[in-house]
Length: 223
Image (cartoon, rainbow, N blue to C red):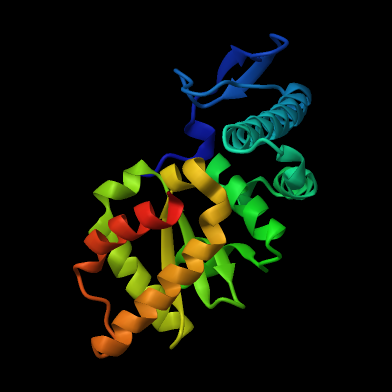
């Protein structure tokens, strides 16, 4: 037997903001109830609060990025223009950067005039940086990537297959961004060349042992 709308019992609970009774079919509401006027005001306040939170979060992330640079360089002003560009991009679109380390990497790429596309979507994946002129997908990896090497490797293969011959994925651990970011571009180029060399020697494949070799390479490059 179907229950018509007329058979539904109506309950009244005070508006969460002003206290005016609000009709509902729920005898025990699991959400806050608002009258129409308060609902509009609540949604507006929520959006404004969210926008302020996102801006504050972005500025905090940028401040951490500047602290990473300050710990490395005596002449920070050579990054002033680049830092302003990165902050402007981040405030305009907070999804451009996923971390402070990515911000620092972006400043270094800008300083070296390396063209980059940020948060580019490839297949179902989103990569940190796409560097068309270098034919490199640059990923800045935090410590959690130490526990997902196999997953990352499979992801990289899919990305390379999509982009085509000549492309490589270069992964730089965040600790090296903190250690000596000025070596970022030389490291990208050296790792790219080395991976291309390995492919030629191994019928187009990167040996599984590369993940261990690259640790020594990073230490040498960024020292």
